[in-house]
Image 1 (cartoon, rainbow, N blue to C red):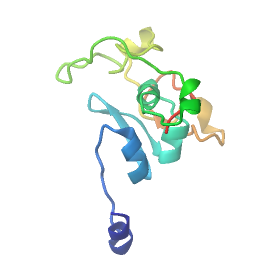
Image 2 (image 1 turned 120 degrees about the vertical axis):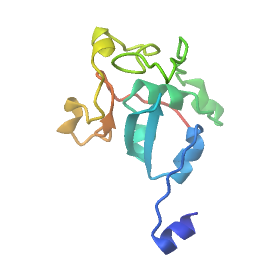
Image 3 (image 1 turned 90 degrees about the vertical axis):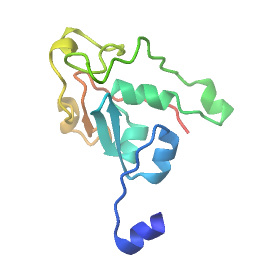
Amino acid sequence: MEKLQDEFNLSYIFIAHDLSIVRHISDRVGVMYLGKMAEIGSDEEIYDHPTHPYTQALLSAVPVPDPEMREGRERILLTGDVPSPANPPSGCRFRTRCWKAQDKCAVEEPLLAVPERFKSSDTPANHESACHFAEEKDVVHA
């Protein structure tokens, strides 16, 4: 695929649920939840500096083959049922499963944007996230 991409100046859209495979194929990564983009950025921004709680939970579930790295790892377990895509919750679609959810999340849908506190910094967390309370979180992954 890389050879064809270089030879013919191609772009691919690769859709998958396995984030460990996506990392090896993609330069830019978008994470979706119930049909809406939750976070988008370069592969380094998403994998090494996730800011959306859903992305953080997904990355915490990626198997880590190194037992020493796996030992100190925080696994984020989501509670609750996935809402129906045909009838998503008001406001933030992820709020019914999010540990950061507050009243604002039920009323106001967060925009996919660079969080204000990251805009003036050189941090790799300076990428788009659709969360009112986006913050960088270290997630140990493969």
